[in-house]
Length: 114
Image (spheres, rainbow, N blue to C red):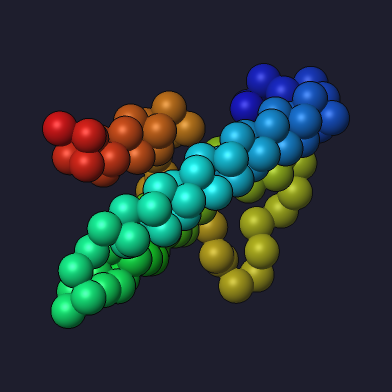
């Protein structure tokens, strides 16, 4: 991503983001469909447990990844080059590199696959 930004090649970056979002939507819709099909097998007294659990996991994982992005990707290297720092100093003095953020995301997702 940094190479694309350095070259000013934002069209490629935006197309890659668009492809990623499209694939995310496919996965999300497939997961919702599987949830609906599995919920048909639930006994009446437990109806909705699968859907509720899935939505809670989705909300919690979204919150965790947003907090990771807010804290780890607000450093000097993520701020546009050639611009002065803002007066309110919203740029943190610490950060994780782009690849380190992806390793952290992988580590957070790994327990759900094991």
